[in-house]
Image (cartoon, rainbow, N blue to C red; front, side, top):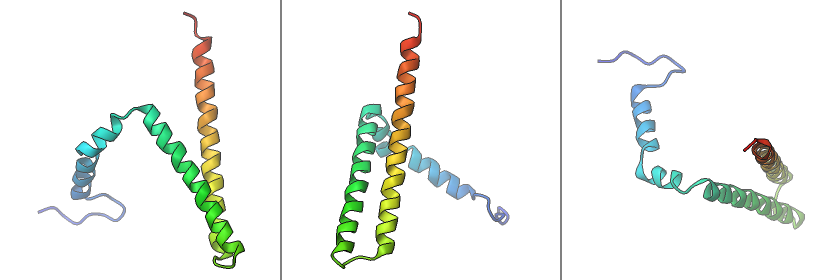
Length: 103
């Protein structure tokens, strides 16, 4: 019988469950979609976050929402935009690096 698990450590059952979840056929199908599909999904998620922030802001202006909700939604949209810009910059940098390679 295994002994108690130390605080902050991971139990073997948790590791096994995480492995099964990672190796599930649904995840394998998602991984097989390719980079383009993953990028398209990420861009759509970023657009959805922006629309959500707009909706929360509009509700607040109409007196149906709180300022806290607006600040959280706008902060989330800003972070999403910063992440998208950082990814774009890295993709452009990688493309330029590939174009500089001798043939």
